[in-house]
Structures are given as C-alpha cells and as structure tokens.
Image (cartoon, rainbow, N blue to C red; front, side, top):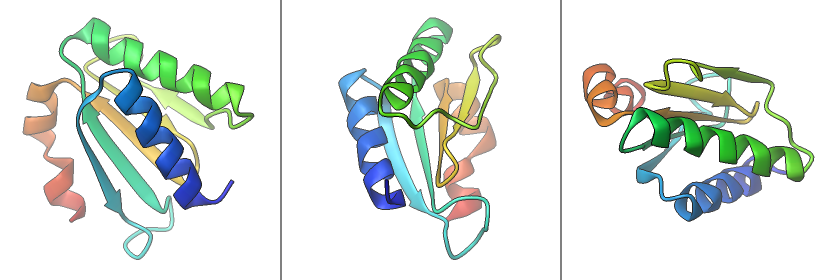
Length: 105
C-alpha cells in the first residue's frame, strides 16, 4: 500500500472511531522516519486507548501491522508507528503542551 493510501485509510479509520481534531502533516521532505504524521485527540484516557486499539486492529486486518506502539499503559499519548505514517493519539492537554503541529510545520 502506498503511503498516501495508508494515510487516507488511517484518517478514515480515525474518523469512524470518533477521534477529534485530526491533522495530517506531510513530513516527507523534513524527515526520513515517515512520509506523514497524523495527530488526533481523544476525550479521555479510555478514549485515547480505544482509538489506538481499534486503529491497530484495523491495520492488522489489512495486513499492515504497526512496527511499534508506545504509550498504551498511561494512554495520555499513544504513538502508532506504521512506517510511512506515524499516528499520535493524544489527550487535548497533552497535545497543547507538546504542540507537535508547530514543531513539524
């Protein structure tokens, strides 16, 4: 699957599982770690964890298992690394504090 197709699939899944404030950053020209970064928010720790868990399930169902997942225990910020697309699922206050959008734009 091409990185743009993967990005679109991930965004579609995040929308379906009610992730909030989804932002897609094209970081391919700024980094070699990925082509896209997707940042979204959940309303609570449970919601953040659910978003990440359901996204991981959908990726595995498509035969695209993530190469890494971090932060599931605390569920304030869960990172799902799908090689070409890195997904950050964050609580709003965590997202405000780290301001990844400003860092990468």
